[in-house]
Every structure is written in structure tokens, then in C-alpha cells.
Length: 496
Ligand code: G3H
Image (cartoon, rainbow, N blue to C red):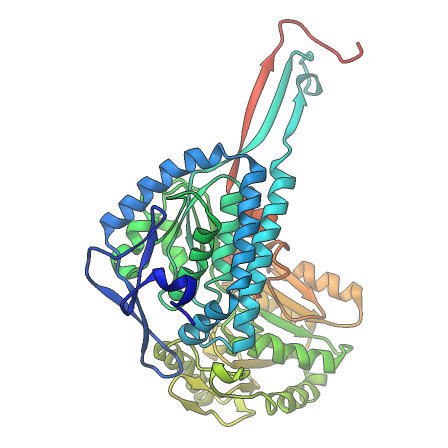
């Protein structure tokens, strides 16, 4: 159970502690932040409301801890990460329980998130050993006008303190996707979890604590964004920010100083369906891509752009699958569970009502109880409807009928977002042309958008983000190149 057994030291009465300097602490604010269970809509957990002074302290300690961590041999860093991964997987049940209660993640998906995170940490350890274990050796006579008098040795060095801010929908997995690369590369890390998802994050951090990472290397600061959000992101002690979330990321990137940023800020992933597509495959992927975790994924299928000639068939096949989706509490492992908050449910409802008023065809009756919204396919959506452009982050998928592939590409590229997209066709030549034409960080051919496997590059363009993620890219992003040049008094040619 969350907060018990090996996790009993992370809770004080009914409030979970925060983590800094290798210890579980109670904030001097004496205040807490409530975490509302999306299903019951009642407070389920409480976490510390940390103060700005506590942020300052964590930053100071992180800076000092990073110096000695950077002197820790790479194989030892990898060994500790493997240990943390094993402990995380061993304790998947209480962490999954927190995900169920905090963010209404369906039971099986909650366990999968924890296991996937353990695998991600182990992969970081292995990839780090591979890519950080080697540098480059350059000689000067390859550049015009130079003799072989300079030997340049390059290696990758850590940036310092990484600020990691994961979102509510993958609080464990998208936290470790930042922690693993940061630590293997010799950085220290300050984690600011989302409010909903904070308890799962604290449990995950305790697994790193149990693995024996040095004091101060990792901190997990909980609290109100209004109190410590800007303070953290504008803190002079931060050397890099890795953020996943909504358009708050745009504000962060405007305020952050001259430091590397890794931002993943959502998408309006288009699914283009051509006439020759395998329509059963299309329907299965629209349902999986659009409705898994109730559409609360940045890579969810958020608009279907289907050729008119096959649109009726696609809509019919999707509808018959939607009818089979189970709707209810996450504890019962239902396909569709309550969305994260009442304000999120209200926002989704606003998009649905706008589409209704403007004449979209409702393939199912719109139904909502509290934060639970039944899956809904909206057909005959037109570009003047909000749902054609905005991301609902809920179980609502709009269908726009198109007369040509160009029309689909045009709609996709007119979006402010450019995270992922997908195209369904049996013609690989057409698929490649469309993929090249789509302004998206990734295009999937004959499958729904998805971030994983976690070592694949993952990036958005336009308002979808800055930089590229995926294990290898994140390790590289959290390092910089350092060169040492040996200057010889006279040219030296090997075997010369
Ligand atoms: O919500 C954003 C995530 O990066 C999406 O990850 O494709 O594994 O669901 P996913």
C-alpha cells in the first residue's frame, strides 16, 4: 500500500514528506497541498507545500553534490541506476496504486508505467556507459593551412543541476526519462512533480534513496506552482530545464536564463487515412491512439483526416470498437476512466458543445458524470470548430473528411502543434511523401502516434517543443562537449 512498508518513512501523519539532502522532510511552511482523486473528487493524499527557502537549500545542496558525483566513475553511476531500476520494479504495486488514486490511470497501465520506467533507467545506465565512455580525437592537419601540430581530445561533461518537471499523465515515467539521463551523465537533479502524480513521484524517488545515491544528488520538492513554480524555473542555480506539460512550457522558456531547455508541450496529432488503407488496422489504431488513458496523452490521435470515399466505413468500424470500451473506475481497469480534474472535464465539455452548436455529427450520445466522460467520436467536423484545432486531452476524437491527401497535410501543417502524426496507406511511396510533407517531429506509418520505445528520438516542432528526447538524445542534451588541445612544438605524423 502507498506510504507503508519500505515507504513508511516518506509520510508524516497524513501528509507525504518532501525529499532533500538525502532525507525525508516536513516543510517549515506548515502547509500542505491536497491531491484530489479524479474518481471520487475527494482529497486522497496531501503533500508538503515547500517554501522558496527550501528550494534555495535544495539548489545549494544539489550544486555541491553534483561536484562529487561528477567524480564518481561512470560504471559506479551505472551500477546505482541499475539498482534503483530493480528496486522500482520490485515496488511496482504501491507506486501503481498511487497512480490509480492520483491520476485515475487504469490499473494495468499504472503497473506498466512503473515497469517501463525501471527498464528506462536500466537502458540509461547502459547507453550512458556506451556513449559517455568515448570521446573524439581530432588532428589539425585535416583543416587547410594546418600541420599536424595539434591533437584535440573531446569528451562529454555534465551541465550541473538539472531541473526536471514531469506532467500529470506519466508522473513516474516522464520523471525518470529526465532523472536517468541526468544522473548517468554526472548531473544532480531537482524534481518538481506535478501536484497530481506527486505521491507516485515521491515513492519513485524513495527507490533511488534506497539504492544508495549520495545525499543531495536528488531532491523532490512538492508545492504550489504559484509559490515555487517561477522561483524554481528562474533560479540561478539551475543549469538545464527538462519540462513536459502544457503551454506553461512556453512561458518557462521565455523566462529561463541562458540554459539548455528540453520542452515537450503537447500536440494535435493528425491521423491521415488514404483510400487504400487497411481499414481494420486504421480503426484499431484510432481507438487505441485516441482513447487509451482517456485521450490524456500528448501523442493521442487528436484529429482523424480521412478520405471521403472510405470515411463511412472507417467511422462505422471505429464506432463498433468504441461500443466495446469499458467505462468506469481505474481500479476496475476500465478503458475509459475519469479525466484528471473537474476543470479538465469542463474544458472538454466546452469543445464538445462548440462542435454540437456548429453541427458536428455525434456518433455516440455525449455523457458525463463528474470527471468521467464517455468516449465520443465526432464526425463531419469542420475547420471552424474548436475541436478541429485544440487538444481536448480527453476521450473525444474528431473526424474531418478530406477530398485529397494534400487537404489532410494542409490541415496538419496549419496547426500550431507539430508533435507526431500518422498516415495509413499500403503505398510506401505515398506514405514517405506524406511523412516528409507533415510538419511533425515524428510520423508513424500504419500505426498510431506513440513516444516509445523509450530510446527512440521524440521531439516536437512549433509549439510542441524544443529539443529532442529519447534516452540517447536526453543524455547528449544534458552534457556539453569539453575539449583539451595538445599543442606540439613541431608536426608529428604517425608512422611518418
Ligand atoms: O503525454 C505525453 C507522453 O510523452 C506520451 O507518451 O506515447 O508513451 O503515451 P506515450
